[in-house]
Amino acid sequence: MGAIHNKNGLHLEKTDVTLGFIPLTDCAPLVIAHEKGYFASEGLNVTLSREVSWAGIRDKVGLGILDGAQMLASIPVASRLGVGGPKIDMVSAMVLDLNGNAITVNNQLYNHLYEIDSRSEFSPLIAAQALQCLIEENKRSKRPKLRFGVVYPCSTQSYELRYWLASAGIDPDRDVEIVVIPPPKMVTAMTDGDIHGFCVGEPWNTLAVQQQIGHVVATKYQLWNNSPEKVFAVSESWSKENPATHQALLRALIKACIWLDKKENRRLTAKIISQAAYIALPEETVALSLMGSSLKHHGLPPEKVEDFHVFHRYSANFPWLNHAEWFISQMYRWGQLTTPVNIEETVAAVYKPGLFRIAAAALGIESPSIDRKTEGNLHEKMMLTKSQHIGPNQFLDGQIISVGGIIKYLEKQNLSKADIPALRLINAQKEV
Amino acid sequence: MKLLLIDVDDIRANKLAPIIAWTGIDMITINNSNADIYQLVGEMHPEIILVDTNSPNRDTLEHLAQLQKNAPRTVIKLENTRSEGINRLAAEAGISLYAIDAVPTALLQALIDIAIAYFHSIDQLRYEAEHIKPIIEARQALNKAKKFIMETYGLAEDQASDLLSKNADRQRKPITEVARQLLDTGSFI
Image (tube, rainbow over all chains, first blue to last red; front, top):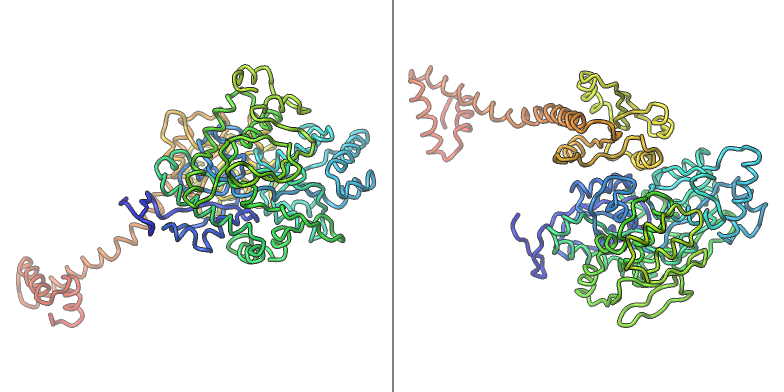
């Protein structure tokens, strides 16, 4: 392969690049970078490949069939550790979006929760407590367990659903049944009565409410404000062989995210990504959450949630190492990971803030100078020195994770299967 | 030993069926996107699963692997061997492999090799045949043209070849074209 230079005179190792995406609202950064010509202006000829499963995306990136992909923020971390699948060394230098998921329950279950406590309508904590009462009642009357759908075992959605359930003392592994269903099949599974609830990304929650089959009881934003959702990931070997191409992709994606975060571009975004080649759903279904309207209940107007999808503001694209640490904490909490690992080393091998800083600097964008931040301490946005601001970051359960305090946080989590002494031993010097 | 084939279309399934039967493995084909994978795998206990690389059921298989220690799990690398075979199985045949831990690596490798060789041989032969066709046709035209010259002018084979190539040079045309022209019109011009 000969050296190819793009119009900025930069050498690219590879110009024909294939990237995978899943039909979800937050495939938008890839689609917009493609449709608005941001890839092309970096000298890249990108082919977008619509994929149907996260396992498929993961393996194809691992095998080199795809050059890179949109991925759940937890997948590169889980793959590095070989949790819930084969061990694949992946890296991510960029977060594509924050928030964007929700937990929806079917009408019958919602009516039960509403009867137990009508504040379930707007409070995720109370809805979870009502669910806990219902589950106790079901146990006494020997009724079968309620079934909830998530999209992938080690997904952000799985950890969010589990977090919500556990906030009311519901054990996700014993008190309910969790099954894996791909996003486009989730609403059908609820209609068919296969599942009573699910946690999935948009536009599938909006679709369920619009079809009047369910109600949203919690959004990802309410569970953990401005938490990472999708990342752009490549295999470690690919990133080493194609450093300039990787940077060019990151620059194009950052430009797309900046464009996407402008309110006035959201309507056009809905029009583009709802097309048959991408999400293939009505524009109105995709538009709602993108325009900052969180539709929770049929028969009631949507709530105004400006931050339902965040693509760039709040330093959204920066791959915070402590976010990767949180995913590892949840893998331990739910027993998906049992071997004690050095958390600090693991996250530094997967999330690459250094690579992000280079791409951002080339576009004249300031990046945070720190790699980790405290979580759970901000109600409002805050300015960082020499960089963009960061957004609110509260957890549903009011917990705070200080920098280096992930094990201390994990120790406080209920229903946890984590072996804290073993983790302390391996991470001894790291803890503050 | 049981092998479950999920979401693999009939064309590919029919290619695989005879060789898998030949190895003595029982193959069960599931080609219904609404099938309950949890129930199927739970009831059948397959040792090996071959699934369409682009099947939406793959994430469910991943979950099963996590729920049950003895369920088949994704294989994308075989210990001490190259992952090239699995890569080609995914890229060329569009099939991903899941197996329980107890299935010997050698058996999996053999299965992958056979599957690829078989897929490859059929597709490759078809591909090559398509490619070879014009070459064979050109040769036939050339031979016929030579025969025509030899019979018409009473020349030997090498003299006929010589005449053909000289005419091709003079007309700045490929020799096969001149041969075809000769056959069509009976004339070099």
